[in-house]
Length: 65
Image 1 (tube, rainbow, N blue to C red):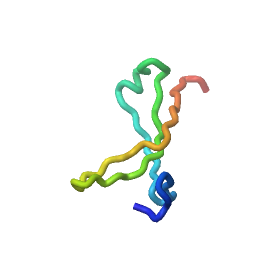
Image 2: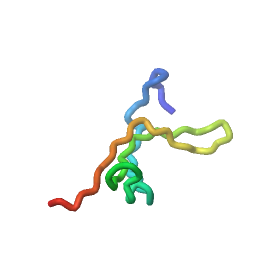
Image 3: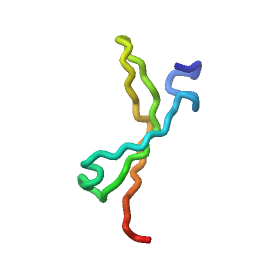
Image 4: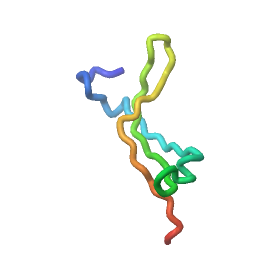
């Protein structure tokens, strides 16, 4: 990872990700939307890579001009 203090992550370790699931498109409790997430890569002791979501913003779909 980085040399940043615990609880902080250097910008080079943070990635942007857009995530859209079938439930997001159907709205699941809100308007149809996509998720823009800031994530950081986490390598588990077994070597498997996972992603930890640091922030999640909903981008609402609209048919208005």
